[in-house]
Length: 456
RNA sequence: GUGAUUGUAGCUCAGCAGGUUAGAGCGCUGGAUUGUGGUUCCAGAGGUCGUGGGUUCGAGCCCCAUCUAUCACCCCA
Image 1 (cartoon, rainbow, N blue to C red):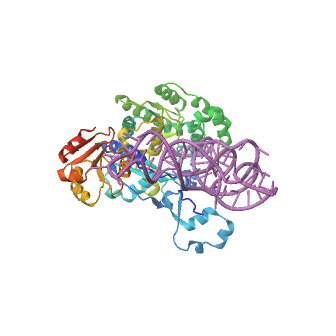
Image 2: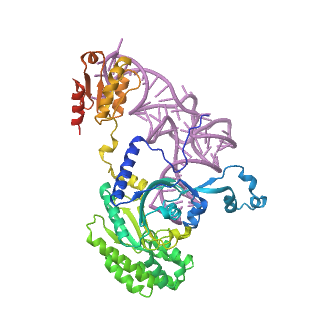
Image 3: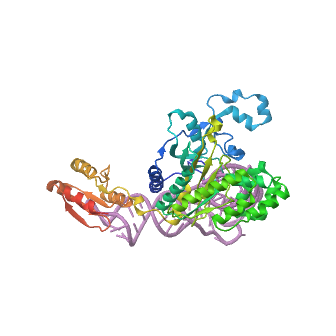
């Protein structure tokens, strides 16, 4: 049986049209990054497992793609480990590399490793694929692109402001309606302190993150289930029910968590951030969302998340401040903020909303029919002249039937077809056919260039 | 990792309560038109019904397993 070839679960092939559209997104994002003075870097697709493991929580470790060691690794596994069927320990023995899970942790590794050559504050961006062994579903893939911008080595809140501006500019250029949600991890810590469960901040944040999805009752149930005491959960309730404008919410929460120094610091940070943002003319609505938690446990200050207003797809951009990510790699006291644009989800949003401009599907401008050897010799220098003039063109490689060549040009949506056979060669001209109208005209080379230049 | 739905020609789908040689539209190939595409007409090719087992006289249809895609949970871009 000739079994059909296939690709791994959650991965995709991209056709030329899709690539043109994806590149439109990447180019847009990249141009905004450059506009703000960020510099591009790349890191390897695979990292040592030791730099990846333990950075994304227990769940994250499970979602890492691990790469099998080369050689006869099985021989080195002690029999008792195999007998125990202890996957975790066996994994350690047979795999020491993994595919990157995001761009932030490899970036932290990069910064620590190359700290002496970098200029701080270091502003970098990075557009590369990441891999997660997740089960694919709507808007979720096992291989997808992230477009990260980070500034590391500065704890100024101006960096947060700049990131918000970047988010605003990118989505303005892509013509997507979005809402930016902001929260601060210090406020969440303050809440946990206030209700007397400072140790359980992770469980608490994960639970309240689900508030708009499962409702307040279920959030509270989940907290019970995770061992948070009933009294603490009761205290949490009024916090979750906060409503009003950003400032109103801030003021209310400030009174509730006034005993927590960390919490108040968080509130101060958010107020400062909003203060700056009010001075700028932003297109997107910015909303303080105290239920925004984001699972990644390395965030320590601001947390950002962007949601598309017109499509139900989860967050399309996210990020935050991490004070000590490089500490894990031996360089403490370096603070960074960053956000990550989810290019694939942004793509899905734009597809659904039909937001791609027409030009992203353009192909060759001029097509030259191949009539045979003599004609090809006549055409080759002309084809080159067209390219020199800045127009993309191609000469069909085979002297196939005219019908076939015309059909090819038609399918590729090429607007101009040039034919040059015996007659044209004799008179030193070219026959130019405009595909859309079907109109045909004998022209000189300079007339041809002029004609295609008029197209817009 | 848990739970559910799905799978028939390149694509979108039909397929009568399990019953002989599995259909349509679009696409593809060739011709009408040997220097003319997109429109029209004519002809043709293409499927071991996701894969592997099982039930049955007989399975595209029923059962089990497996893979894929989709959806929800977990988590996340």
